[in-house]
Length: 346
Image (cartoon, rainbow, N blue to C red; front, side, top):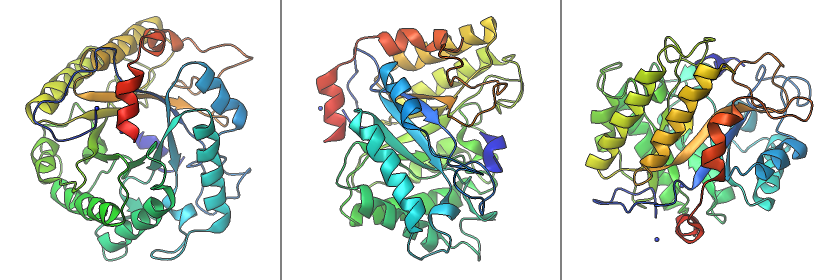
């Protein structure tokens, strides 16, 4: 989400006619936030925290099949082009291992908005080669587990679509040269919104610029985020533009189909209002009904450190499910083609 800047048988492939997952999508996910919280120099356990085993187990037991795991690039790699911080790396690996032990797929999410210490990727301070270095190091660590998914970057913005795709191409090429065949999730710029996909925000539309994205391994999906509030940011306590948000995802579904792409709805969420919950249910249903082009979705958000009044939060309270679960229940409890989904991650 914009306000968090301070606080993928079937493959996600560019094939001409991807098959339909009759039983619905494979990735039914939750964003477990916390490791991206706080100031960069803050201490673990004081300024930020990775999700607890209790939280991970709760969402696995609820039927979620994947976790999107946000973390900060600067904490993992305090100096560009240098080795990872050992303590932070151990926390990341331990958390991923805990999730994988419960059968969850894990989406690694550098939650940095195409920035490092506030400077854009591609700037003099943060050359594209440094972004490539991050993914060379990460892919070397996790390439032995195909159930770990590489989300290149959370919500790029303020960077032109052309410049972002150039950076994404460079990182993807390096990942494949590193013999990593993991699924890659590539976002667009302008916070990668479905509602803005066809608009010229920063020197070209995502719909046009992503046509230049290339994956030598041909194992990728386009990551989309879409909220339903008045400015589509997910920061307002309303869902007044829910119909438009759903329509945008439906339109994007056709774009994915027409272009032989697959997508992943990496973030969406609503307040605990009955009308908003109904809107979120329609959003999930739209993705599930278009499972020929969507790998799945991930609700934003949960995590041990959210305050009780965080409006999109579905972290359990007093052992009870949050109201927003009503929007997810049908998809979470729906049939899944285990064999087809397994073919995504081998």
